Picture 1: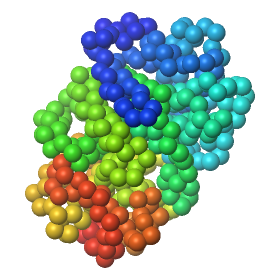
Picture 2 (picture 1 turned 90 degrees about the vertical axis):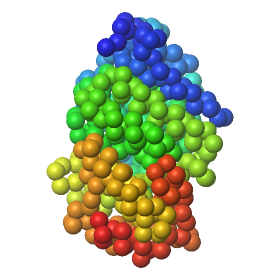
Picture 3 (picture 1 turned 120 degrees about the vertical axis):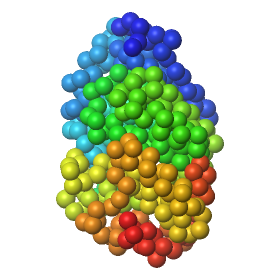
Picture 4 (picture 1 turned 180 degrees about the vertical axis):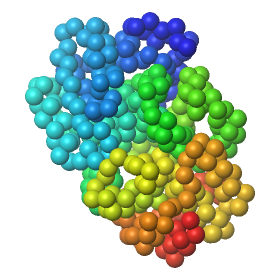
Length: 382
């Protein structure tokens, strides 16, 4: 438990990960950050737009607004709430956030605060990237998946019917504040989904991290603050290292997409079957679950191409299952349809499909011109 006061997160609980590069910033990880003075520290001007969704805003928006007004009484703080879920990550809701900035009279030194999961972070970050050609954005992730992935690195976007994240911009945040207390109100399914991205870091670059996750699975799934802070900090350190080397995804940063080519295809096909992106039910997958399946598919494709062993595939599959994540495709998803979506994936090139595969746990690499027959075989085998 934290000893933090209402205005300042305890230094003994605080973990910080530095992200370098042309626009350096810090990721702060601790309980009770959303009600601390740390929220106001990145605000350079008078205008702050807090963007959240219908699930998160009732839980945490008031404490963030109170923290901003307590530290900066002169600030103009507005709240803009979008509907919850992937279905809201659209150009129309992006336009709504831009309209809110206009109504606020936001100037070039204004700041957008993104309070929520990956949908809010992506949409609010994109609005910040576009308003007056770019203003500050502070990411306040409230899901595990957002804390270890989408809030870090500056990738912002909205979806189109043709696929996820097809319209967006690179726009690094001014700061990231990951309040582990917020995870206590996260549904168990969403917490488990976040571990897909945590496990990904071990799979691409840190085999001992997978051993640590296996040993600490019970504490992590029960919401232990210390264990979660450690997992978040280690995950963010891996992402920060890669983002520093490749901020615009021209090289190493693509490694962060292990499982995502398959995963995004799964999400897009689900949306096509249901008439749009919607909240996952018992017959569909959320983002983390789709990525978990995608990682197993990528591992099996690696094995089929002679890059990895059965043992490596089984270790990954078993660990994902230990965290309650799915590892196989349902028969309702057509392999040919999934392949068609992959052709529009951002990692695809004119010469053919490009995947993040591996030579075994902790040794990922980008493989270009993967034969479509091999991809179809992996899908059908799943």
